[in-house]
Every structure is written in C-alpha cells, then in structure tokens.
Length: 139
Image (cartoon, rainbow, N blue to C red; front, top):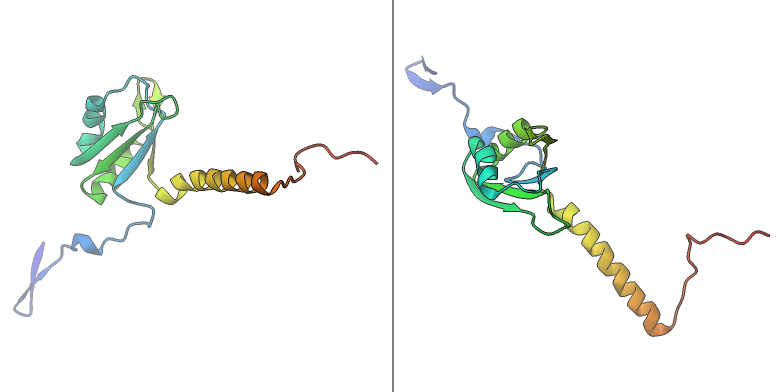
C-alpha cells in the first residue's frame, strides 16, 4: 500500500530485514521420528513446499536412521517449514522438527573426548580414583 503524504510517496510495506527472529532460528532444520524407509525424494516433496532447499541429508546408519537435516536457501522458509511441519504425520509417525544447534550437537562429543583424555592421563601416571557410583561400605 502506498500513500502520498505532503507530496511524497510513503510505502506502508515493512522491509523484510527489519523482522526480528529468535536467535535459535536458522536455515538448517533437524528432523527426528522419520520413517526408516523415507527417501530423499519424499523429503523434497514434503519440505520443498515451504521454499527452495539447498540440501537434504537423510540418516542411513543405525545411529542416524529416522533423522535428517534439511538446509533451506532462506531462513524465513526454514521458519515456515518448522512451524508447519512440526507434528506433521508421515506414515503414522509424527515428525519432530527442530532448528539445528551446533553447540548442542558437539557438546556430547567434546565431553566424550575429555573423558577419554582423562582416562589416558590416569593410565599414564598410574592414578586411580574411586568410583563415585559404587556403593559405599556400611560402618
């Protein structure tokens, strides 16, 4: 909508760059609870309705089956897909659609690496610490 005000054209349309999105919103979606036999083409059919997709990665190992990553070209398309497809029923399974958060994804890997390094140091210097989860002797 355009208005003429004091001889000037004034646009009522807000520019898209002024829209504030929550910090967790990004172009990469992490999808869980997918049917194990879903194909990338079926994923494109479901997620492509919400915008241009750059990449889809469907999990194929025993640890990653039933999950996928969908990367959109535009952050607003990713937000729209997340809003509309979270809880969407595919082959009697309800999709869980989340924004990918790299800091959470690597936190467990970092903790495992640190534990491994600690165990190596203990072995190198002949140290042993009591297991805090073992039952305590009764006195």
